[in-house]
Image (cartoon, rainbow, N blue to C red; front, side):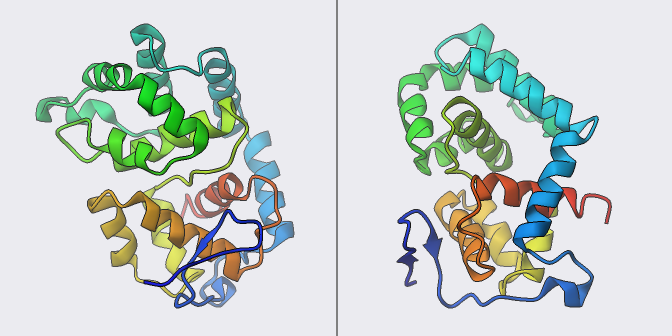
Amino acid sequence: MKDETTINGNFLVNKEWKRRYPEDSGYLSATVENIEKVEDAVQNDHIYGRNGDELKHYLELFPANNNYDTVIHKILLIDYTNSTNLRLYRKKGTSAFSLADQIVAHSQELDQMIQSGAPEAVRLIAGFGTVNLFSFATKYCCYHNTLCYGRDDYSIYDNIVADVIPSYLDIRRFYISQCRVKKEYLEYKRVIDTLIAVHGLQSIPQIRRKMDHFLWFSNRDK
């Protein structure tokens, strides 16, 4: 698979995936105006805006992952605000507590990777349990990278987002799902980056985070 790096050196783009026009399917067009409008709606929402404020407050206080008590609080906070339902995995041998043990044990490596935006951090966290924690791992990395370090290197995987992407990009839903199944975060990032590029949105500050919000918030009730 051929890829290219865009002018700003930060986006992975697959030239074979072409733009689709979401308005033809009843979805909101991916324009600068719509991206910013949805972002404002998220930030001002009485639930999601407050969730974001709580995450920002706690993660800024405790950016490192070397203390068990703070890590377990971060896991539970992300789990609660994002409805990742970690409690459902306890019978399968994975819990917030076992996940915290693994994150703390790998904290030095993880903190360096997350701060620099390394995609390997997602794969590492996703494999800590007896189940595939890919979605949770993308959120854990994204929130730390964005809120603690002011960067924008990660995109979140969510079923709603995965369902909507093919309306914006000529790609199969199955391909996106396989990124999760195989824990191929770099390829998932390429999907989102290509979507951003073909719609000409690279210049928007924090575009990966805003694209997460745009795709999810606009379609959460459909």
